[in-house]
Length: 348
Image (cartoon, rainbow, N blue to C red; front, side, top):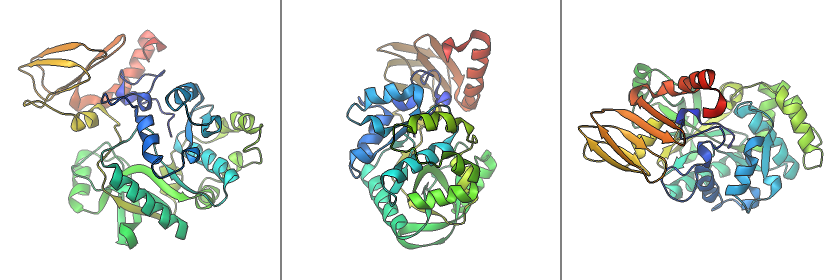
């Protein structure tokens, strides 16, 4: 899944080039490219599909020039993750009605790829045997308010546990309770299931969406027209709200592979190298004076001189400079809205 805007990473992530297409750490590969490279180790490249907004199809082709045109599933409008997953599932079923599927966002950082791929193979083996909706849960190492949580029940084979409940992003006090209980895991947003299992779940829990996207046009010249006409009719809802929280056949694989969804500047700061005063600089030179706990990211080979700041984000991209308290980064999405209202779409 690679169709989001990534507005919490504004101004680095912009409407015309969102975060999944960016190289955050100067590796030479964007998050999308790293995700593709990772899965190509265990899945034939021709079996990897990228679901994205139609305005980003060109960027996908630019960054993944070796994939076929039929591997880019373009969405005419944004409708959250449930319609995206249903569309891809119907498309894949037309290719192989017995397919097992991994669903993953294109913008996650995986530090221990070997462990990650082992987890994926374990999950694929599980859903091949059982009609289960499997998600990967990450054991938390801190009270985190930026992630959803999964509470599990009894433990089963291969470190796979029955899900008791899904919980949306909590406040800090509740996140602390979750962390200390040992029963809750971060919801990674990575799913594994058989194509028929997930389509049965759509028919049961989101029947209108299943009816809208089910059809005989997949793999034909009429598929694009069919999706353009019907996809906008789908409810705007996440797979978590629409299916996972309602289903009774949900399971979680306990995963440990150095995961971050890179959803915020704060998560990027946590993963960055820091100096003796806990300042981090990304892809730029920096000189910190009487400053601590800051994250600086500048475009190009620029030098930042920072004096007297503590716990700030300083981020520049093209014609925008953001200076924001790190503890208040949740306000960035509102800043984007306010900038749009005052100055127009030029700065989105």
